[in-house]
Image 1 (tube, rainbow, N blue to C red):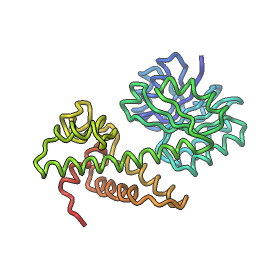
Image 2: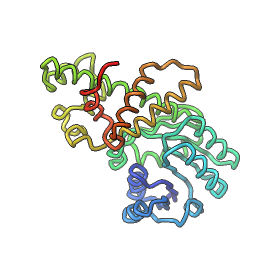
Image 3: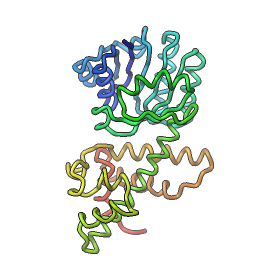
Image 4: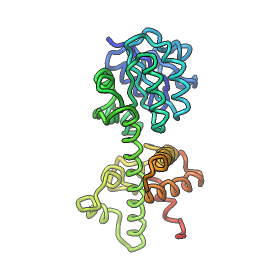
Length: 295
């Protein structure tokens, strides 16, 4: 039986920690929000008094936090207090520089570490079907994989320190851009008198096929499980998509990469968020695009 610390028990971290409990692990958790601590306790997570208390005598530590600055601060606090041989896993989506800085803290104290951001949203977190994109040494990946398999369906070793974060932001840049053009196609179809179902039936079996269309269709009807059929309740909130697109642009600037479509996707999601849609699903941007004026 593995003893696991879990810091960050929000919409993603809470269900992930609960799945570790269901798998038979002893999970000790912490979050700054009392309500989230209560929810995790109800799911079988032992609640500690602080982040430092959480990591006492555990075999593995998982963090799921909002941004790179939080990961840096929390790892600086907990890593020196972790026992020898523990593996430290960060499943937040953060900038590559912060991920590599966190790895450096772990290495300084002789601990194995992994950056392992996820794809699959809150539904995947609850169902235990997340994809983990992992960066770190082969030894760290081998140590972490049995734990990640209790929370996810696909565990991919992407390379060295920071490679998981690099894979995540590249993937979500694709996702954000393809969702926008999928929405644009449905808006154009509406103006041309083509039904949603007709466009779906053609594009889903033709060269226009994508995950944004066949799994997460942005209009009601063709894919019953998509947020479009539930008033665009997230799923994956527009604020989180904007965060990931901005991370991709920061990385592109740092690496000297030209990403004009990714940059424009970030601009559109920023406008969508500024219009008060931060908490809506990112596929709801179709509602903004229906009324947006061409520059």
